[in-house]
Image (tube, rainbow, N blue to C red; front, side, top):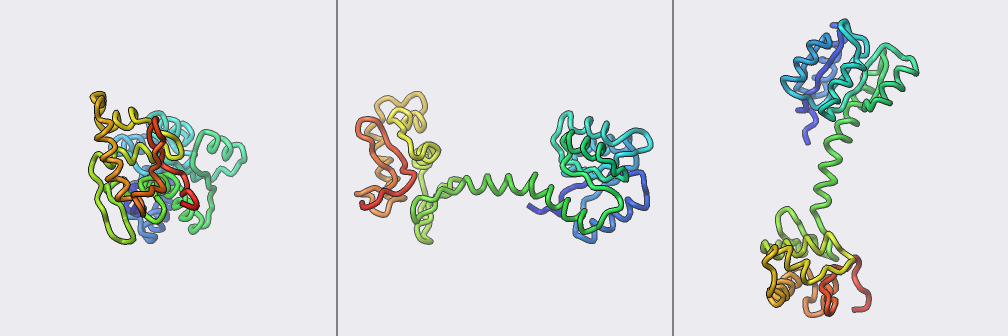
Length: 240
């Protein structure tokens, strides 16, 4: 994710500080900044377009940042960093207790503010995407199955999965280590009209084994549980 394209809303009534913040962020590479000098301006800009991050002063000429925070968080989880001259422990604890993502007091070190902004953006936007991408890659022994692209990386050679093979593998992967019954697998592929597809299921499982097993005739991963269904091994069986 390109953090520097994230829209940041700066809310502070101190014009000199606002310009310093703008210069600091633009010099760092952030290029999508909007500025508000009051609660009213902040509401208007927020309603026009929700930002990716709000840097919010506590003391504003027509209200306070805590109340504005509550308004913003009524219908959104936008990350908010309090930036305040009020260094009292009660204010800091109140802001963090309300669910603010961070609270930094003035004066502050510019580099510290940049690091805190980056930490928030990574936690809120980058880490979830990274985790989601990680969960889309299934490692089966030496081979990697890309669930997004329906493909298997076999030592650098890409092997495509059919739609039905992908559905079967996903079902087995979601339940790896546990038995998935014949009925459950058939229903996954053919929905409620799955009766009579048991033999067809065996054909698809065989083809799937040919793509993810080193030796399909002696499967190490997609294991048959006689009379019940199949199980994707959580770990490779030793000695076989």
